Image: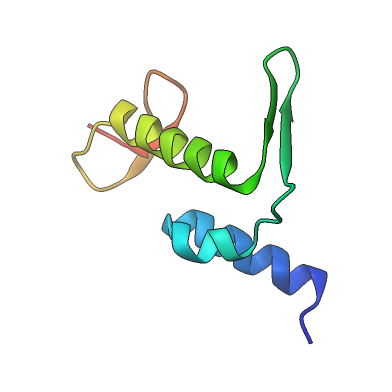
Length: 81
């Protein structure tokens, strides 16, 4: 039996690994994510597309270098120069 804590942990593990195949298994078809002022993202397909684009933008903003984590100009966690 899966507990809510285990479900949340596996969901965030999939997000951290950028494992969208596993992540999709945890999204309900009627999932909704509401951004105040920007509107809601409704449905699992739109949510997955949003997450893929979000992670792509985060990595595009990061500069890879020394191998230690820091903050880049956009305020996102990324690799230091």
